[in-house]
Amino acid sequence: MSKITREVHIEAPVEKVFDLLYDPNNLPEIWPSLIEVHKVKESNIGGYDYDWICKMADLQIEGKTQMMECLTNRRIATKGTKGLQSMMAWDLHDDGEATHLVFEMQYEIPRSLLKRRSEQALFQENERDIEAMLENLKRKAEAELVHA
Image (cartoon, rainbow, N blue to C red; front, side):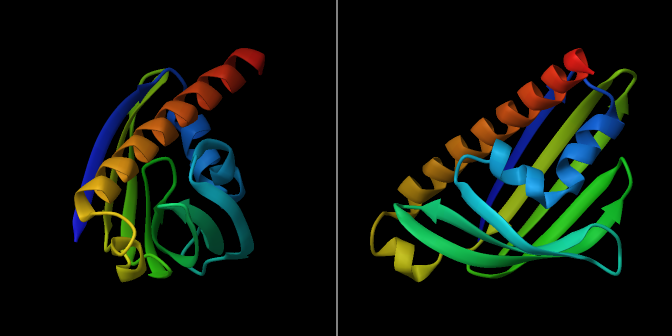
C-alpha cells in the first residue's frame, strides 16, 4: 500500500476549511484528478458517503467513499471501498485565525493502472495531484475569506 502525507498552513479559520472539506460536492473544484462526485448521502456517523469519478494514468476510475470518522472542525476520515482501495484523513488544527492541515492518504494502486505505468510513476503523479489539491484548497479558503 502506498502512503502520502502532506501538511499545509491556511490563512483561514478552521471552521471555514472544515466546511469546504465537509461537503464532498466541493472536492471536484479543488482536486485536479477528481472529475465528478455524485450519489451523495448523509452518513449515519456525520459527513457524507458518495460515489466519484477520477482520472488516473489517463483512465477514468469510478469509486465509492464511505465516511469513517467526522469530528467537527477537527478530523474527516474516509475509506475508499470501490475503484481505489484507500484511507484518507484530513486532520485540522486551529491556529488562531489560521488552520494547520495534515492530509494523509494510503491507497492500493489498481492492477489495471500498473499495466499502463510503473508504480513509482503513479506514486509521483499522485503526489503532484495531492500537492495541487492542497494548494487549491488553501487558495479557495483564503480567497473566500477575503470576499466574505
